[in-house]
Length: 467
Image (cartoon, rainbow, N blue to C red; front, top):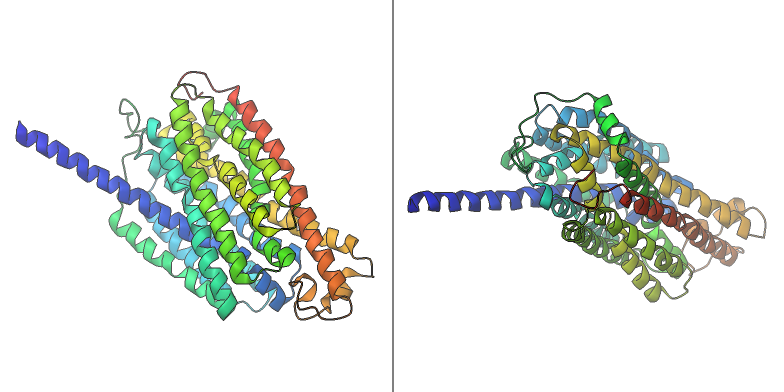
């Protein structure tokens, strides 16, 4: 009897260690993918100067160029993940996006960067929904929001590492070597995933030991379940609208700091990494833990946590972009980032609670499709477009594009000093206020996002049922 007890304890201990490694490796993979995804934000100002890009072009590289195939291919790849080995799919995806990221460093023209960024999106399409499905088969409903929130630490870790390292490298070595360095670690993580991770039995983590589904439900059945849930529809709208503002704002923060406050690339990268990276880490964990803890009393907290976080974060963001002193502005953005990052775990816990185990990769892919296409695809592009338009209107000494392109080696969007050319000061002021007004304009939609989260809470039962 004692031997059996010891064996059981040992088995549980081994399972616990494996779950920890399983989640840690998926977080590292997610972080690697996010470094590759946001590195344009870190090197953007240097790239803009060398290649004479507009803010709109920079926004397209940050957003739509990556997200269009990432979003559209996520759903068909998720359907494959419902049927085939998910570990293999993730390993292959990592190799694809890592190679395409490395190629970005060889680009000699905007169109080449555009093509390589499309390739990064194609590679990353197979990762996150597949990982969500794996996590939900390793962690039961009562720990799922926390596990998904821990997995969601990947983006802030990626931002932190990419911004700190990338900012230093672009300052001292230029922007091209950054792509070579950040593309390589993904290949190592892909190999580790293939060697060390196991494909879990689907539905094994459900309460009561849910049986393995006989087959994969067709896509129309998944969509019918999701769209038939008012809670899902409102949570999706809150997430998509919030992502539009957050991606647009976050991916232009290094440019904003360099242009408005005259910080160096290394300084802007350091601040970007600490604010978005550390703030995102805290917010993701806090959101998942709070939702699981408070959700034990009422399922409505799975919507209230992101609702209150978004509603409180909005005025902090607006205030930050009106201040002239960067230390205070950065402090407010940090607190706002914590609050605005609390949506991930609660949202996907609701989504996965609505569908069956063999629907989860598809359900996550549906969320990511809309969220990334609208959020990352249109958010940065909208900020870039608005910035160009505001700058052109604020420049009163002729054509902003013609006059300011010749303003000096930094073009119209360089740091405030040293100044070159007869219109340099006017060009800088128009450009700085242009990006500031663009950030303020996009941040307003956070209110819209909070409203949808509050509406979602009305459709979540007060008890423990996710429906």
